[in-house]
Image 1: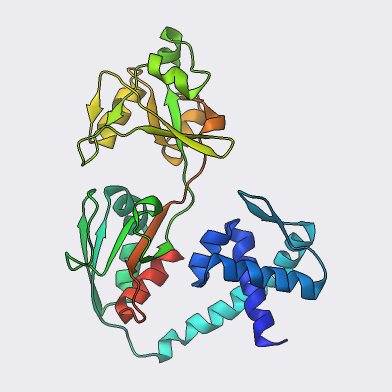
Image 2 (image 1 turned 45 degrees about the vertical axis):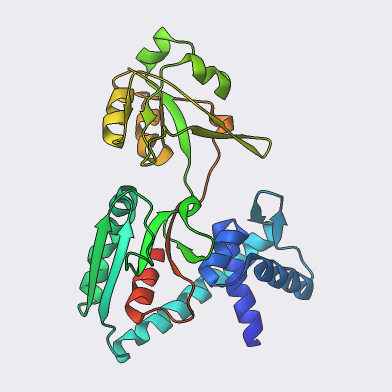
Length: 294
């Protein structure tokens, strides 16, 4: 097998797992167009279609699933073999300064940073947790962790969390008082909690229909800049909330919360670690990125 064929198989496996050329390209460090071109060449060489593409998604075909089942264990074994060489490398050292949102600190750093520190005793990590958007270059940070939509286009951004979705939820008691909204426009007749942004504006609720994004300005009795306080009002039945699906999945499953407007709530890219687009990043930063993206 030629080296290019191994690279293409690795690229195919990444696309098949991520179900997105954009996310797969970010993980592989290449452009989405280059990745798409490589996949077309691989399909042409094998004379079989491996990926089913639409304007909004990509997924492996039946043949692609069969190939993924075959090559994934071998690729994983190669990665483990390469990772085992770390014992023979010089230990990475240095200091990494990171700015992270509260959500990023709670969902990514709290899970992965302690293990990273144990594995890299010569690396120091300074984390500044704040929800305002930070100019990492001007303020001397090596990297930031924010939602992908907040990252400047001139930054190198690597996904460190899953695709997310915000959904509209309320309690059964709330819907006993008010009929469930049938379309996002109906939210104007409902009591909704509002999130005050750092800019001073109240965050609109984002929806999508037939590929078109639109926003609804809601109103209600409570506006706050604290997610826990807003969630408490929703769980008490005082209002509808626009909440992370993963945070309320158990409550929806057992009936404590009811989800509405599901068809208009679409996934969006999750958390990314980003840094300036320079050719060589410090080894300590590269090690941290590798740990967070696993």
